[in-house]
Picture 1 (cartoon, rainbow, N blue to C red):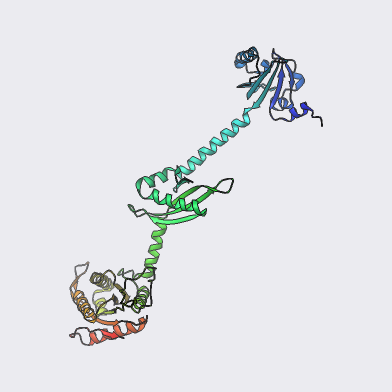
Picture 2 (cartoon, rainbow, N blue to C red):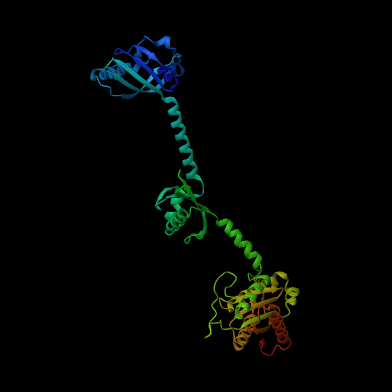
Length: 420
């Protein structure tokens, strides 16, 4: 099959021209007309240097003369501006080669306008990406397959510089995402400030499908976490006293009763409980005491001093009760002027002492914001259970009954009602 060389040259996107040793054009391909607008018959027979920008003609002549003088086929590469037919100029890259055998000067010219525009667009894209990454509130970073940080935005650097342990934490999760090839997510706090951070670890794959980098996107979610915790607190705590509410207290009490009965290997939050084990390896049962506190004649406080004063009294009672208990105990406002206290591991004698301490603490005078001083009393009932198998209602009923006995006989100390 014969190949027409000129037809092939006309298909090239680059301009191809041939000239003699004096630079007189003898051939141009079709790209010359497409790029410069000159038809072949308009330029063939003219000097190639006529089409070079006047400011560059002398240099172009010297370059070609030097190449001819060397009498080798080395390709020279340089840039120049050529005159279009409409009088404008086109910047090109020239590749010139002199064939010493027949004295032909071969020149390949590549229009740089497209390349320049591509470079300009790439620069614009790079600047836009830089502006975006540097001004988004998220911290962006990239780790390579060696676990090395290879890119970081200003926000990323600020977080890492301010918190010593964060870089190692993120690098560890990035390595895990790299190894597993799966998206990873983690939420954690910044120890110095208490801010909440949600970090995503996104694997980036190469052409072969292998993970080459991991992109880290870390967002400040403090406000969301605070709102979540506020909603949880509102759902589980009494707004006036800050104590847990009756619903949450019941959950905690039933969990404690199951644990006391040896039926709860882990508590509701997934933590192993700290009950002691007996010689047979089973959890030694420990008593659970439920204390029922009812304020005496609280309605009279509201009637005589108003509901604002009544609310202040309830808040003060809540604080005093919270100050009496151990960290593992729970105090709740059960409703109205009724309070409950859950104490794990109390003997009957210890429970009776707690009841006495409650009565004494609540009887102390209370000074209100308006300067009024009030004194109240409370009736306290205690019910204890060793293994009630989660029967909270039975324990509550027993504590309530003990409280009413105390109210009927205020002079006698409260004695626990033991539930088998």
